[in-house]
Image (tube, rainbow, N blue to C red; front, side):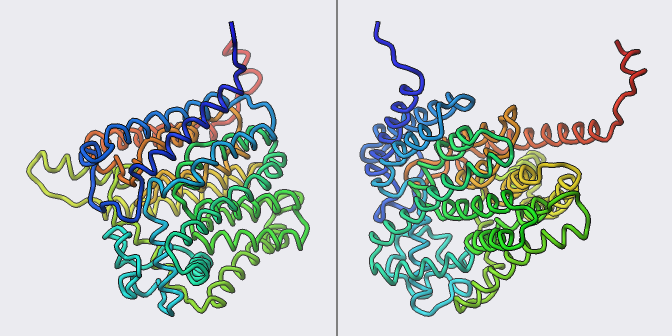
Length: 479
């Protein structure tokens, strides 16, 4: 009887899944002339509807199964990189998949190239020559991206002059981010005592990378690549002034692409310390990281002829409402319960506002926790996870941020962040239709219950950590 070894079966199953998704993208992906008002029923009834959804479901399931199957046992780093390259290949040549963000990149770049700040006016002010490709809710909102990416988008559009060529370049930039991650992640993993091969597999073979980072394509790939490179430099050269400054510059560049990367900077400052922690050592070593990051963000902003209007644009993502964001889910649940009693309450502003305050408090507590522990990079990954979880809107590809850092820093026994990425892979259809929008019930309620359960677990864990260790006499008595 002919048998196929486990790694080979996994590799080719994932490739088949990626190939099916690429076909689905051409049949009904986020094409420039596709309808902007759609839903799962319309997709099913449209041209190739049943075939399109079948390809998407089977392709996603194949990628997810292959990735999950080898989560604890991969042959080697070289094998992983070859497999990831194979899985990414079909999506490099696919139509935009799962999102219309790349069209927004192009229009914001066109605005900037024409001398209009995308932080002051929406893309409809130009008007963008490709305005019809952008979802209605994003046409009059300022760009939520950092100044470096706005400058890059302007250069891309100015150099190419066409929508198709711009998409190709944005996809190449996303691929560059993945390649940078592949180069830097092993160094970070080795420094944190994690197998480089396993870290590469969890981070880069994750279906979200092929589907959304490359298929999208999304600037998250570029941001994560620069972020990981900065963390790797800091982790590998603690106490050394110029490498730490270089690591800070890289972290600043990541922040200038998407400002959410800023949450890792305080933890990188801890990792920069050579020897025991003290305020003096934090300033002496961590100051180079923080200084490099701040100087880079400020320098890029003014060098690009922009201002800090992009800070206000960070909140514009809240116009979308989906239960994939825990604070949004809680707000939806409160509103649903209120309607049962005849009341109409819009709890979203309240729950989202509470989440912002809670995030700030938790990040501070997490930093002080990291001070007492030898793994600040792991806490940086947790900080990214908290930032995503408490955001007003959570798109599946956002989980690439914490997933990549945690893959190289988290204890092997932890699997929760893998489960989140696995579930997220099934939430977006090829044309960008988010299934969370059409599953408010029971999605919001289930997410709320999950948050209550997680909060109880965290409180119990915190109490257990503060409980003093039993004395030898107490351990003897308990036995």
